[in-house]
Image (cartoon, rainbow, N blue to C red; front, side, top):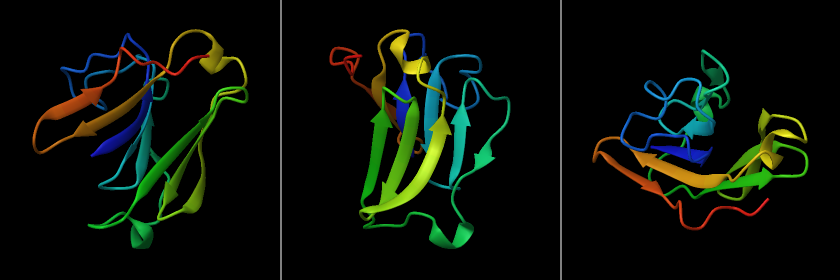
Length: 117
């Protein structure tokens, strides 16, 4: 499962990480604790292997549109800044919450309700 944000140029019919390179998205892969963005060609290790998500954990994500920051939470604990894109990145268009479930091949993309910038 991946959770994060994307823009409307993101193709929900493709794998978020592999097939959407150079698109605007910012996600955390819950399986391995790595963050991915269309702006970077490789992953960044965000979570320690001993602190990965498991069944029953509650996941949270916060986007600071003014400062261009995305943070994740596990069971209410802030895991720190995952993406720091700078204050202008999220002001250039609509940003949508994004969740992708891998094994059931379903993506949730709420394009009709963008986060207002």
